[in-house]
Length: 533
Image 1 (cartoon, rainbow, N blue to C red):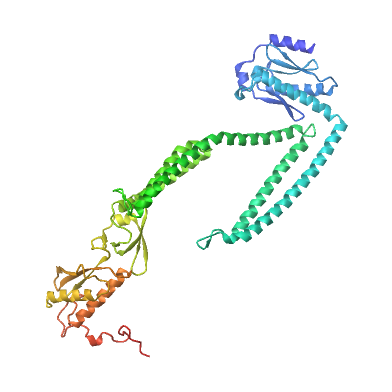
Image 2: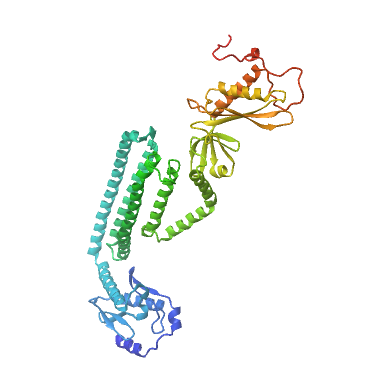
C-alpha cells in the first residue's frame, strides 16, 4: 500500500542536514486559489518547492475522483499526515510551523484540514451546474442592488450639497466678528462642496468594495479572493476599533492633565486681573510686569501639562510623532539663538522697568512715546506720525534716554541747545530762553525751566534750555519742541540778539537778526489773519 510505503520510508529516512533546512525557502500549497498549507523545510531530501509541486499534482488526481471526501489526520514520528478517503494528501512536519506567529503543529494541521475540506466542497460545487446558475443569478441581483445604491448615494450627495449651500448662503452673513466676516462665503461653499463630494465618493468606494467581495464569494474559483477582501476590511475595522478602545484610557488621562492645567490658569486669572487693575501687588509683580508674568506663568503651566500628557497622547510612540519631534527640535535649535535673545531682552526691559508704556524715550536717533512693550519688539510712536518697531536687543544694546522718568508728575522733558556769542551777556541769554519757555503752550511753570551753560567753545558759549511739558491735551513732543524753537527765535529777534549758529567767522557790519516788522513777510501771516486775495 502507498501509505505503508510512506510510513516505512519515514522510519528509515535520515534527518536532513541543518544547512539544507537553512538554505530552503518556503513554498505554499495552493489549489483553486485556496491556500491549503505552506512547506517551510525540506522533507526526505525534497525541497519545499518540489514538495508543493508534487502535492499539487497528487491533489488534482485525488480531487478528480468521486470519493466520499472524508479528511482525517494521522500522526507519525516525523509529523502529521492529512488523509483524504484513506489516502495521504500531504504531510506537515514541525519544521513547517510558523513559530514566529505563535502557531503550533496541531493548530497548523487543523487549519490545513479545514482548508482542505473547504476545497473539496468547492470542487464539488464547481461541478454542479445548478449551483453555478444560482450563484450567477445571485451576483446579478447583487449587481442591480449595487447600481441602485450608487445612484441613491449620488442623488443624496447632490441633494445634501444643494441643501448645505442654501443654508450657508442664508446664514453666512451672521458670521462676523467686530464687523469683519470670519469666513468668506465662496470659500465656505467650496469647502462644503468638496467635503460632501469626498464623503459621497468614500461611501461609494465602500459599497463597491463590499459588492466585489460578495460577487467573488459566489463562485468556487474566486471565493478565496472574496474571503480575503472581507477579511482585510474586517481586520482594518477591528484594528481601528481596537486602537480607539486602547487609546481611550490614555486619552482620558491626558484630558485630566489638560483640565488641571486649565483649572490652574483659571485660579490665577483673578489674581492677575486685580494686579493689572492696580488693586493689589505682590512686590516683584505690579501693573508694569503683571502682563508678561501672566504669559510666562501660563505658558509654563501649559508646557508642563503637555510634557506630562505627551506619553498618553494617541500615536505618541509612532515613527511619525518621533519624526515630528526631531524636526521641531531642529527648527528650535536653528532659530533659538535670536528668538531666545530677543525674548530675554524683552523680559529684562519689562522686569527691570527700564522703560514703560506711555513714556517718551530716545533710542539712538529714534525718539517717541512707547505704545507697546512686547516680548520681542518695542513699538514707538514719533511726533511726526510714524510708528517705529525696534527689536528688544537693539533697545538693550543702546543708550536709552528717558524723558519721562525724571519729571515731577505727568509729562516729559523738553530740551534744546543754542549758541550765542561772547559779546552777549549770559544773563540776558538765560532770561530770553526762559521767556521763550513761558510763551510755549504746554510747558509747565512748575517745576520752572532752567538754563545750563554746557560748553565754552572757541567762538561762543553753548546754552541748554531744559523744561517740563505736560499739555492739557495729548500733543506730541515734536509739536511742543517745534513751538519752543519758534518762540526762541521770536524772543531773540525782539531783543536784537544774533544766534551764532552755524559757526562764527567774524563780526558782521550790523547784527544779524529779524526785526519785528519782517516777522510776517509774505507768504507768512499772523495767526487768525485771512490770506490776501
